[in-house]
Length: 141
Image (cartoon, rainbow, N blue to C red; front, side):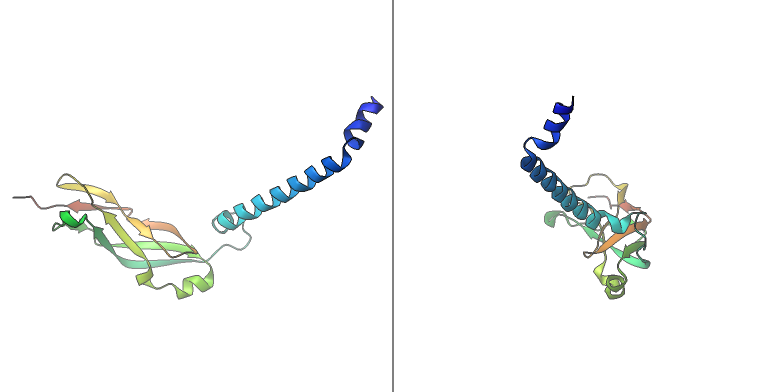
């Protein structure tokens, strides 16, 4: 039994030591990568990032080039709450936020469509109110 335990620790010691160090380095790299991407949005962060709300952000309607139609959406603006570093939020202008609905290849006269929000890097969407809008297309002749 003692011989077995001794072989576990002593035999190929340098190979085992190198493997251990390599495993610790890989663990640290992965931990840093995960923390950088996830930590600003999690509860684990000790210093929660500030939040800001933008009211009356206009919704842009996106069509295919050959399919431009007159369309009515209700409502025409949304309220968007975002989170990010204080410096980034102070520099963020309402025109940097893009709210749009994509009507490429749609069929029908009236339906609801989800609002897609595009934000600059370093800013995270928290909430969009309303999350979807009613789209009304005129009858085609």
